[in-house]
Amino acid sequence: MQSYTIGQAARLLGVSPDTARRWADAGRVSTHRDEGGRRLIDGRDLAAFSVELAKTGGQEDVSVTSVRNAFPGIVTAVKLGDVAAQVEIQAGPHRLVSLLTREAVEELGLEVGMEATARVKSTNVHIDRT
Image (cartoon, rainbow, N blue to C red; front, side, top):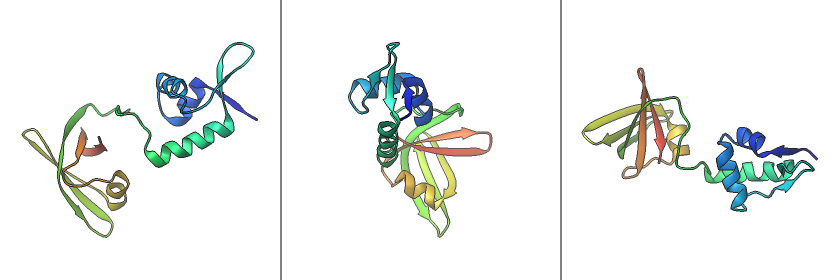
């Protein structure tokens, strides 16, 4: 059976090696050591953990993104169409409106009153659930 180093597992899970180490230290995923003392995760364990992570949205509170302009705020309106949706966020004195797919809004579980972060890059507004 294939085993993965902490670094390889982190890359596959889309997190930093430090995050993968913390999860292993907390017992969220089991590890063993090879002859060289490296911590390894069995492929089956990593596969099961990745499915669990996807179901719970297991990313830590920190987003990994190249977008520099982040506006944390509160969702003030969600308008759902058949395919598209409109989400409004009030971030301090700034009102941001994003058009995205209905599917994205549903996957993020966006609702009026919840915290969210609007990320602006050029003419695009990205919404992160916080």
